[in-house]
Image (cartoon, rainbow, N blue to C red; front, side, top):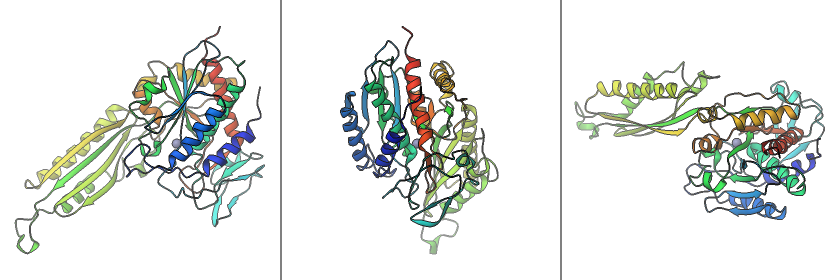
Length: 413
Ligand SMILES: [Zn+2]
């Protein structure tokens, strides 16, 4: 059966999106920004009011809660992140709803030049008659991932109000700082206490993701020889020239984010800072396979060695550190969480689709830490920018998925 969740979902998304929760990668602490606590505390209160158990806001900024089981079954976790992306203005979000979308262009009250067109975004063309939520033109919307929060809250309220629905114990986690890769505290897997979990942080209806990039970060330090330029002949070694040589020697027309898609990985130079005596180059390395990722690290090391060989007086070091791994490595050993999600999708009349994510999720880290956590659709589109939008009816389908999944995961009596 389908439920009338639209109004509740819309109200929640609009309420949560108006609260600025932008994270900040340069700020230490968890959460990275105190403003995230405003939404976290609100969710803590709302969960308590709807009758959830064990509601707490941990000292590392995660809201946890339990929906006690009404049947035997594994403990299933549902997660969403409260922070919004640092890449675009997220202050003063004014969500507005285009009711009964007519299939035409959507314009924005605060930015007359901005147009959301179904021609540019064919998925929008399929949403005629839906209620579409956008921001007002100068900010992102933050459906990423407040749609996920709204979906889980709406499903939780429904399950708590209907104890006749059979489901095992459910754990809920709302995390901060996902957008800066710091959403999963080392303490989260144990505190969550789920056998497996799902993040509601995906896009189009039907998408169930269990493949992500594997990711490393690299920092190259070039140390030259510093000396007064007036007396530098045959003595100075300028780190800037060597750093430029490294960049110049790395692939440009292949293996960069702007020249790859699908299942191809890349080496992406993110920062180049310093001066003539010392330069730091930062990179992110991405590939779906461990071997491909290792090869990219080896290539970067090789380039550094080759440039170092041209100038023995300089020192060039290359440090590579792991970030996250493709969750498929763990999930393929036990596909139960993925199979359940696929089955739940089909049960509500959808054909599930799995596309590898060219990025990571909180689920990648959690999976690696022992809690298998595929990613499920919410409906969110054009995230991290002013054209972000979501259909309320898509969110309602995701809420049905959450409920169906909760029932399916319970062992038959
Ligand atoms: Zn997200």
